[in-house]
Image 1 (tube, helix red, strand yellow):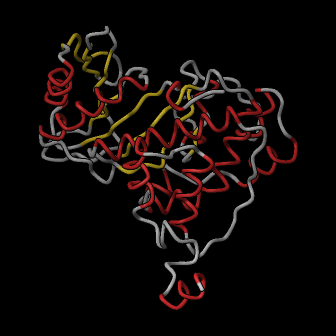
Image 2: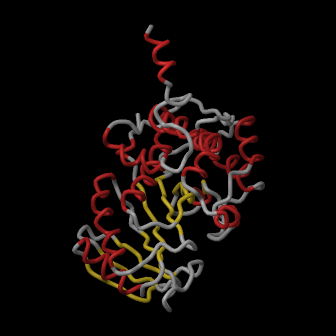
Length: 303
């Protein structure tokens, strides 16, 4: 059985308002690393190498607004493991201390390792996300402009094909996802701009990307996003089946909390902060399915 703690991941954090080199210096200081390259490749990357020899990239991002005369930047982590979460939590506050801001034109993207997945497990993942996607959008307060352009909902047609025809090969899953067989998708293909982006499975990096997250420099919030992505990946690997049918609810906070705990395994003190950040924006009562009982209801129950 796969576990959340075994999953590898990467994070992209988009920020504005500060020069790229200033951000790179903060990242290097946080991890006792060093800047090893500047102005590299088409993204004009500045590279910070950590003590394990891994490259953290700080690169230009034209989709982020120019603030205080500085172009937007994207911090791209190397492949990380569960043990690297404390390091990530050190880096984020150092970046924030430079004056960098999480502008509404930016976002946070989390990648989970897709190499251990199969067409069947990816189908389960897609159905699980689709079933709960309305609550995910509400829980994360995805900005309307991002939902229209960069974080679009999953396609009904794709999910319908996955549910009814159950693809057993990557070729068939690819055909369902793109609408035609596309073995070598371009980096900026329109199909990438979905909350759950599967395009990278057919590119060299072989990751599953979740793009639902507004820009943030709150380390606890970003770690909550990582936990959600890894928990979904883990559940998809371990489950035998998954439903895609959406269930109406009049208590979204309760339903989402139960999903996080009972289905995705985010229970106990380890995930207490994560549950808080993932449910705080939803209406309802996280502890009581039908609302907190009144005094008369409690008396009736105990009599």
